[in-house]
Length: 360
Image 1 (cartoon, rainbow, N blue to C red):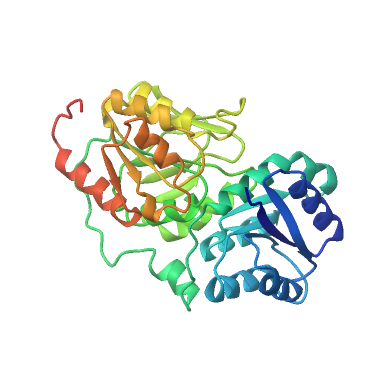
Image 2: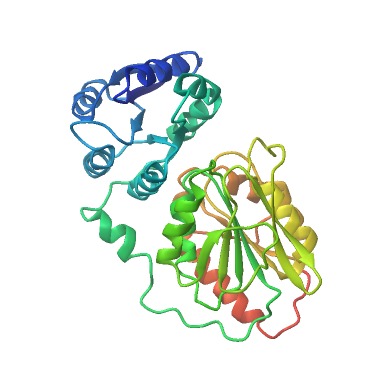
């Protein structure tokens, strides 16, 4: 079996050495080069033709984002960003994902050596996911592609709907942009949306703020105990599980620590299990791009409880893992391209507006 060939790009000699060591310990991958800045990396990529590159966000001579933008326009390839756990690091990482980076690794500000070694499994898993990812050439005007296409010209209000309805979204690799695509198509009077996106602590706040600036509904990190309201989206905070509970006549968000589920925290399984248990036939489930199987069994539980579920199709997924598993479990009523998922949700909501829902 041929090994995945990786080039590491980072201005820190320590980080370059640690990442190379982590990669070379794996039987299925090898570090074929390490560059201290993007200009050296450009020649290395041209000469060595790697399968994946890891790319530091902040580097000398050329900013990592500038380099990524040029790379994805001229020679698109799988990129895993290496980001610092700072507010600026989080904001820049969101931009990198918008430009086409497959995923990112959050390196600690202090204790970098020990921190990266502890993240070894996470780093190599993301590299493996990147090898399976579908990457696309970036359009010449990335700002227009990222922001201008986010909002449709017009989205009609849904009208009178049951406030009991909730949309549940699960996503992982490639999911930040897939979720953006869906959220920005929803009207202001959309039912509440609860989202679990695999993301570490320190990044979900910036992600929620970015979505809030693009969407017609209010988007924020979920807060434990708050009411779940129509016209609002609630994102699981990085490193914590999100679920829904009943409190009298209201739904509330429950945000709690706990052991990883399916090796993830937050876990889609936790959110979708609560949807099946608490919301039942008033739930709409969406499984977006991502590696692995997190949430697939629970999405089947949602369907068995009466929810209506959609999975993203293979052609539009960055990594067709979680949707494939959901489909294999018989959890999805429909399998749709990303751009058709939000319209399908809206159509489903309108078709059941004012009607008593029936078990599917």
